[in-house]
Structure formats: structure tokens, C-alpha cells
Amino acid sequence: MDLARAVTDLVQEALSNARKVGTVTGTSGTRVVVTVGTSSLTLPRLASYTPTVGDVVHIDATVPNAWLVIGKTA
Image 1 (cartoon, rainbow, N blue to C red):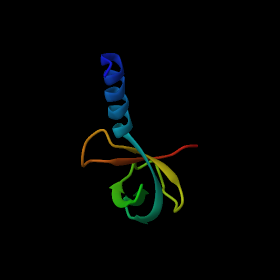
Image 2: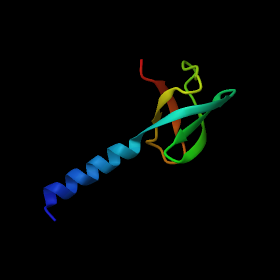
Image 3: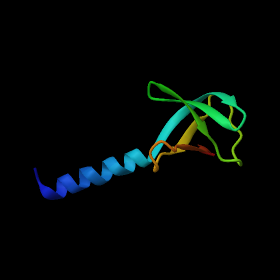
Image 4: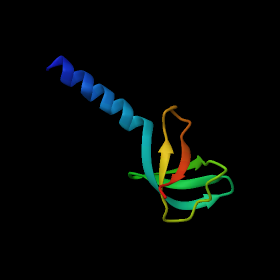
């Protein structure tokens, strides 16, 4: 494999793991129930974001096991 291609692939993989996109399927106080792929997760959210069922949201996944729902695109 070409070294430049291997580095590019590694960087792209790291970036794709840093941001996720999901759909809000429920809320629970300060938590948001989000479907990401085939998994349903209950995640914390930013205080400035009020979720609505059906919202497609951006999730900060830079820290493993500490995902945070940032909000939806305006």
C-alpha cells in the first residue's frame, strides 16, 4: 500500500470517529435518546439545545464513552 494513501485513510478514519450523526427518538430530562446506525443510545446534551423527536443531531464523539449531543443543523 502507498504510504501517503495509508496516512490519508488513517486521518479520515480518525475524523469520522470524532463526529457522529443520529436521530432523536426520545428525551429524558437532560438526556437525549438517539439512534446512531442500528444502536439506540441515551446521551447528555448541551444546555442550549432543546431536542425534538425526529431531529437529526450532531454528536461529539472525540472522547470514547463520553459522547455529547451538540444539536441539530440550523
